[in-house]
Length: 173
Image (cartoon, rainbow, N blue to C red; front, top):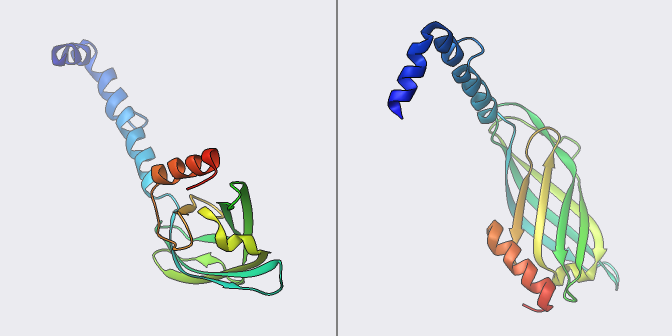
């Protein structure tokens, strides 16, 4: 294998050297795209608290406090809504949207920012299982946090989807 590579390189050394190491060569392209991937915009989110306030009989006011850190090197902004997807006790999928209350959504690089999101939802929200919080940013990769139940203990990707499928298929935990 190594002999074939050396023979290929020695067949036309100047052309092959430029192909690998030149200004638009393979190695330069790998560094360019690797650098772009390393400098991409992304965030880290930590949920601080989730408060339920029963406003009226069928409705509930949900208030979510969370902390966002921009891990990337470039400034970005948080999206206006936090989308929550969950499974109700009757094993149906529901979607809830919480509106971010702050007016300044800018996320400077490597600085923690506190936000509050709230909405009035049905009281069924309190009893939902397998919640998936989706935080979006204007440019770049957002973040998804997955919880099994109201205790808000984060679980991984596979544990979430296996449990979600079991709950939806068998209609019980």
